[in-house]
Length: 291
Image (cartoon, rainbow, N blue to C red):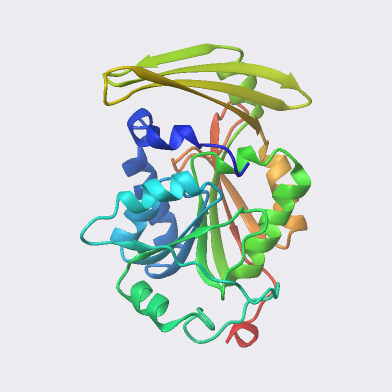
């Protein structure tokens, strides 16, 4: 998982410009507001180049962007805007599973990091979502663009949810999207998709690898300064999850109040939903335990 999106990081924003990030942001923001979270610290797992992270930061949230790809995080930092900057935020967590829980929810952080967070700058962390660590709890965790599908072992998805539950404020909210088995088996199937731009081309081959695994072979041709093209290849694996799968894993991890929507709409998920948005609440901590 940590090696995914290496060469692809250079052209990711270009090739993903058809993703309706603005619409997704509006729905996520609406969900957060409805949950009573108009501000505060929000962590995004699998933040990639920071497209959603920057939108949420611009809406006033103190953002932490977490990704396992150093190349994607490098691109995220390159996209800094005047209103929302970023910094590396490299640190060594204290190693405890339980959050430290000081009043600002950022215990033991150096003063420079705290000051940057106060200015709505984005703290980017190079971490695998299966083992991420924070200094304290956050009001919400967001994970979009089917990042969770790259975790192909259900036990590891459960561990992600356990960590989310651990680092959420009391009654904090998880907002996550995922692709379904229907999407992989009936929509993508074993198609080959090609896209050609002025200075980059991509061939995306799909393969059902068995036992619920969907394999993606990505070939990228990128123009260089001298007009020639470099070729990069990456292999990706994903697993589709059903709402039943995700609800069971979420409940086993300690989360509660699980709901599913048909993509980034208000409609309930169906057996033909290609992308599903799931929300779930933290369960188990009291304000005294984190305060």
